[in-house]
Length: 487
Image (cartoon, rainbow, N blue to C red; front, side):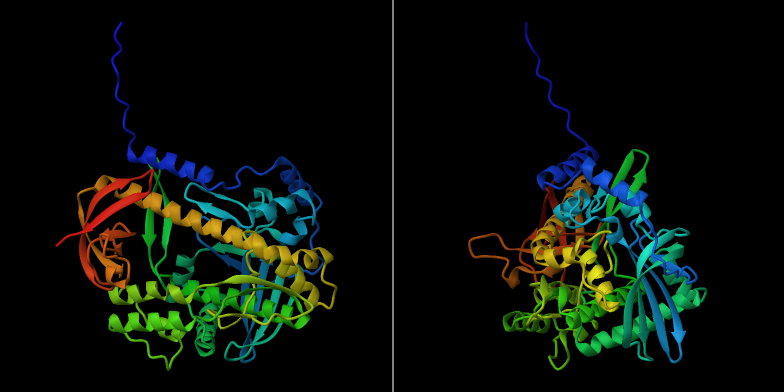
């Protein structure tokens, strides 16, 4: 009896993508199903949860997040106070749901943060907390750590206190909608003040030498279709309202750092200033691209002058990544650390505003609330401070790797049907920047506008130039894209 061998059927790109994304969780050893004992711990905490006695539900808090978000950490309310401002910033009261030393506490320490994969997030806390009882959802009575800031006419902080209170968010807003309301004049006074305060806080950031990289980030979006979920990558500059909103979060993190430093106990997010070698290399790159950085102004102020839609400016922004290195976590108890500044912010800073999604924020909140109200810092928080840097560093590295390989996988799938096509691209890192070696084929990194893909490309090229590239081959499973410069 003869046997006819049947060739295996080739998988279509969508099937290959689904399989590749699923395999990422195993490859990276991500924490998946929540242990039942930890879920039971969470359910018990929710069942017996009690709201704080302080009632701030009269204030019309709102949240501003991406439309699909349900793990809502922050809500805000802004009003005028004389010639200055009053800012109320409510942060989800996660500590009240986590029993120190319990099963839930142990599992959150194992995870460190929420991980965002293209086919779904892996939460730091069980959904009963992260997307329900602990989330600042609209029209729900919730416990929160409410920061009350008084700002002067220039939006400079004059006082800060934090207290546990019950709040009720009035609306779940998104960035696009809020930007439109502010631009057309239909926004509430609180949201109009977000722009006013945000712009003044940006000016204060400029004066203290703070910096931010305004690079259009590659983000993965799910797109429902007739054959199921597909994906696309978008790369768009931030809306102005996102910057204004971020300034309120930065204000809170800086105030938290100040409270902890004065109390001589806490944990900071620190980053050293760029070293001379990095600054020199960056200066040479800006000169080569025709937009020389005059060191009479801070590099943060210089970066704010760059336009990401300009190819040369985009290349400079990418090269500026060398200035943003060495961030870490610095715990202290009794003695203030020698290095306290987060150089990109230009001030001491602490992660504080995302406790549903990031472990360390739980410590910042309970420590600041205790110090702000003249109480003893909980023993569990002090005793475990030294463990946090290792937990958070490992978690941050894993999250960064997940983001990187996820984007690589999606990019390969998006480009798979386009093999043989040519595209116009901006060179964001050229072979003359040291990528090419004498015994190797020179290459650079290019950014294709549509579809929004950044990838390695073979050929001699110079950063900041526009080139034509050809897609030679794609392998979704291996996350490999081969581009060659044309002409």
